[in-house]
Length: 279
Length: 332
Image: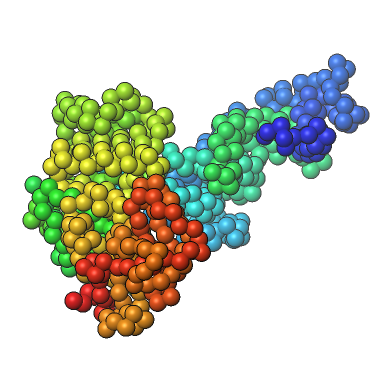
């Protein structure tokens, strides 16, 4: 921004608005993390104060690591999220490429059909999905979750990626064809690197609902072996007594992996969201 | 090596017919330019020759072999694109070598060819750079180099100068002309700029609405255009077209090039007022609003002072006046 368009009161105003929003958005997260380090009495006595030497307690974390197999739950969540993400990006990009690059009969109809999933929530089909998984013997496996999440993520991925693929220069792809590159090489070596920002956007939008999902793990894979973090945290949510220390600790821990993945993608993400708006 | 025959090629996108039956013969070593207004099908024709687009019907023969169903990489062609189309993740050297590598050429041979091509296009200092670190002119030279190293039977250029600024365009045009002289290769060049066509071509193919209007050397097209379209397209400023009836002529339209009109302050064939004068130094373009002939462009060599509003008489050179019939064709 040039100095000509910048004035001090305006800058202060803009920052005030942004800071207020940040505080509001972060408040629940900070509350969870803060209280996870407090004793039970501390949580209920003064929920809004940070842990003091008197209320500081790691009981929540020791419970989480002591009871249940939390590390295993983490591993399950990570496997499901990363594998689903991989398949969503791979198949989404491939379908997007085919829809944007090749002229074939029914191209538009196929695009609409694939985008239909954006409008129809996959949870409407839960009963049918469960029957399908039972019939194919996939209940209580991570494969079941990966398959469902891949299906859930694909419509939006295809919709966004095919738009971005259209922007990749035709000349570049044709130059590759003349140099004798196969369609796969053109896709993986020329086109994918150029749509990387939009891939990151899709990755973030796909990843967060999968990591946070409780519905499908509860229905399709509730066994001890295949529990995910969100399902594992339910362990401490009793009908009569709720172990708040443990729940808050588990939730705080659950933030970490998403945060790491987000940081990896975020540099690309900002470019992905703004690209097209300006040259 | 490097002749091309196109036999009755048609191309339709759905109900839209873009090429309506093209027949063309290009001899070995010729520089052929496809020229025409945008949407005339010249780029589509080039892409059909390259194999990037399948023709709906008709045959394409390179060196006598029917390549209608051969993939682009196997046709022995190389193409230079308007947007350069360099691989962003590869260095200049690898950009030039990729096609050969794909074809399984030994690396010593690839090295040798890159060396020759980069010397020819003065690209040696940039061989290890990536396309993002090059200027527009350098990028286009790399794209040309990538075509040269393949030693193709046929060079295809798709408006290669359109993205360059005016000064670079002239330089690069010169380089392409020199390249053609050195390599003696067959080149096919698509442009909408008639100056590029006139300066580079051995043979110009004028296309309009999916048909070939005329094929000939630049001077043939300039001196004896087959119809009013070619007459209007070749030459700058554009030829003046005058309604024949207004002049009492039998022909539908009379055409006179701006450079074949002379002006005089006292007497002449058509009396008119100066609307506007463009002073270019080497020549002057006058716009005259004539009573009989309508708005005329007159090109005078050297400096000519005429103020808007002044009265001038324009006289056409009778030997260089064209008559067009109702169908647009030249009538004697």
